[in-house]
Length: 158
Image (cartoon, rainbow, N blue to C red; front, side, top):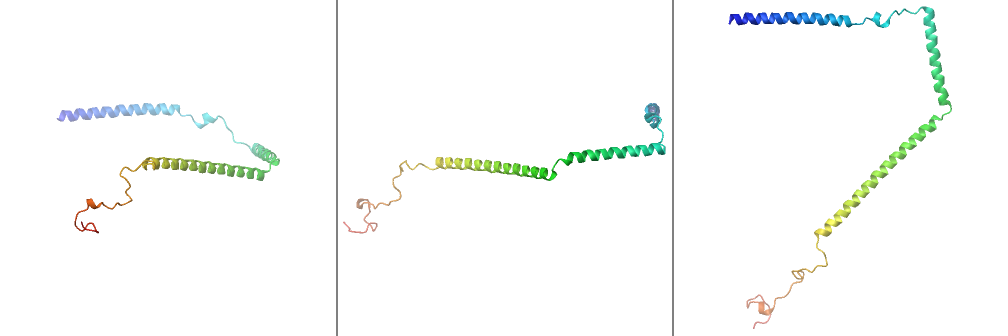
C-alpha cells in the first residue's frame, strides 16, 4: 500500500513537470508571435504645429464641401411635399390593407353562412315528405264501439 502511494506521488510529480514544460514552450511561442505597436505602425512621428494646422484646415475644408454637397442636393427639393406624399402613400396602403382585411372577413362570413344553411337543410326533414305517423296535431274522438261502458263515454247508454 505504501509503495502504491509513493508510485502515485512520483507519477503525479512527473505529470506536473511535463505540464510546466509544455506551458513554458507554448508561452514562448505566443511571445514570439506578438506584434508590437512599433512593428505594426512603423515609424510614426508626431505632427509639428505647422502640419497639425494643415491637417485641421484640410478636415475643415472636407467638412464644408460635404455640407455644401448636401445643401445642393436639398436645394431643388421640396422636403415638406415629399414628406406629405410619403404620408399619403402610407395612408393609402393602410386603407388598402384594411379593405382587403374587411373583404376577406366578409367572404369568410359568407362561406360560414352558406355552410350553416347547407347544414340546416341536411339536418331538418324536407317539407315535401308526408309525415308517416299521420296528422298528430288533430285529436280524434274515439268511436263508440271502442269505448268501454264505464264513464269514459258521455252520452247515451245502450
